[in-house]
Image 1 (cartoon, rainbow, N blue to C red):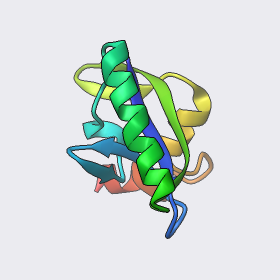
Image 2: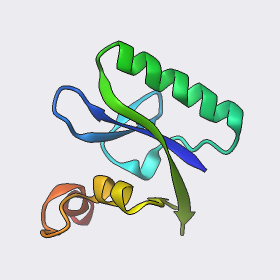
Image 3: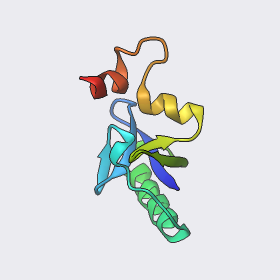
Image 4: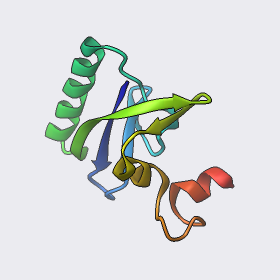
Length: 97
């Protein structure tokens, strides 16, 4: 399973493609379960990059744990959560609120 991620060009925030746009959290990201969906997501990412919406566009591996989308690689887990030294900051703090 894969999702499309990037960094929003206006503020550098990590974003994920969901519901026809870019979401600030990975929870609702559109999941590619097959090559055709991966190709479609890559085309969406390429168009968003060309339109100066996002940079560093990538498909990343994810798993679904108890109905929650979880990036597989540590780098992507950090991008999805926020700072590793202060859990009261970043996206992890917003989820807890």
